[in-house]
Length: 404
Image (tube, rainbow, N blue to C red; front, side, top):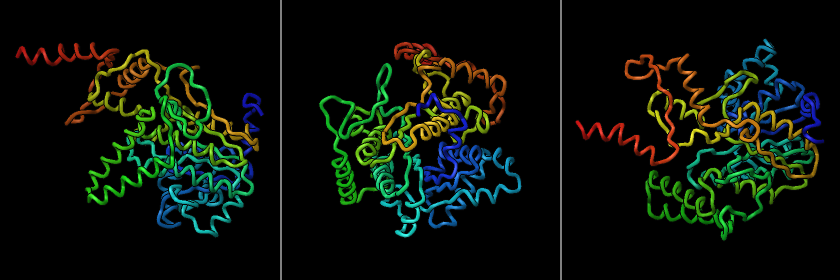
């Protein structure tokens, strides 16, 4: 079925009676997905949530405190009233496990039971730190996908595997980026070939050398971070995060069985637009650091063309896309890729970020400084070239110092 032919009822109906395994359920996108499914399709059979924890009770406590207990679930709580806890108990099943390990670290009995029950797998687990240690990013974003594929091939009635990637696996390119898969070994730099097994061995050898040299934890972390950046840039990617996510896509394409695979590539994910609550966000994400820096006046000017497009997408729109694409490609023996972005149909230049932030803080002046007094902020300054920024710095700071 084509996506344009689907209505809300058919999408919602697709999840009725389904058992869904979600990795990364304690992350921002995982929470929004989980809440949405439970709210619009209460007849979903079961949501199995893979959670890092010491035991089942710890996993339940983590889901309660980090997921169910958040303000995101307010609408769902109101909908079910006093029956909310029993509804969650019936529909949500935390699993103690981690995609970094084969079989997620589950025992054979639990693995066998789970493989007979799962209809859909949503792999949202990832480390999203741009400059993560290479070994950590590789274990989660590459080997994690390998373990998810291995489990998927054991599932006897699997109808869909959805993998959350990122639009920035495309690297630094201009123009329209096609929704095409990465072939095993493909890179973004002409004349290079990527061998994932060799990268795994390189990480292993580097670890051995670090241990042999009795390096401190700080030195080990620095070395592994630098190795990730070096390898990413050698093959044409700007950072370790997008490099390992691209390798994860290669792994998925190489190891997938006969089941349908959907890869979602969102751009910069921001707060929810309206569903279930407008503006819900958790922690400091992506462009939030810029806005907070502006509010604190630690960032009052930026080196960027104000007309450059800032590709952002609300979290609830990403989840809607995930649900629709899963339903659209039900039991089709294909791998499809969707870019979930805004820059073509609804482009937002950085000037809009500046204007929106300024307008918001005019109505809601931030409290900053030692005495936490309210301050009125000046508009953000943008400099399109390094030369203009240097001239501004000289006039604003250097010249007054020399005169005094």
